Length: 184
Ligand code: ZN
Image: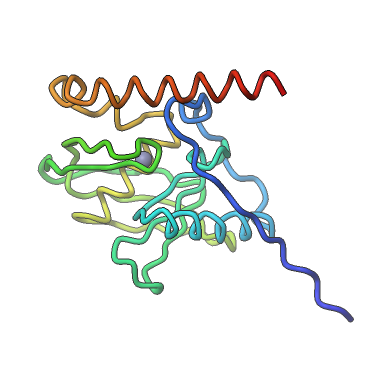
């Protein structure tokens, strides 16, 4: 029997203020080959963009899928499907965050140091895990994306003022793109 051809997906980044970034993402219903191809392509996009985490809305998909890798080592790849944060704990810590949907914009964000999650693997196995420090921060940042919450909502008024021009430029770019799309 001939091998089934592997589905190969390729994603581009969805940038602020694309509407999909503001939607609450929907649970994944089928743990099938298409989901695994989606996860693989998200890891590829994340790596190619030099990110440490990526949420499905950032590639235009309204689904509860996150990929992350805090170290860049292949064995640290982690995919979280239908993830829920069960508990956040520890002191609030401040850290300068970036986001692939906001190129070249960085802002200090305060988050609890630890979080405990429930999620499913791409193979459909449920698990619980606790994260601390940098990995906990990535998980909480990416989880925000599934709820339609963005870096711009988490930054201080001072950072927002500092990035006003860059944010306005992203909005202009989006408007120009939508207009050229509408003419097609
Ligand atoms: Zn982000």
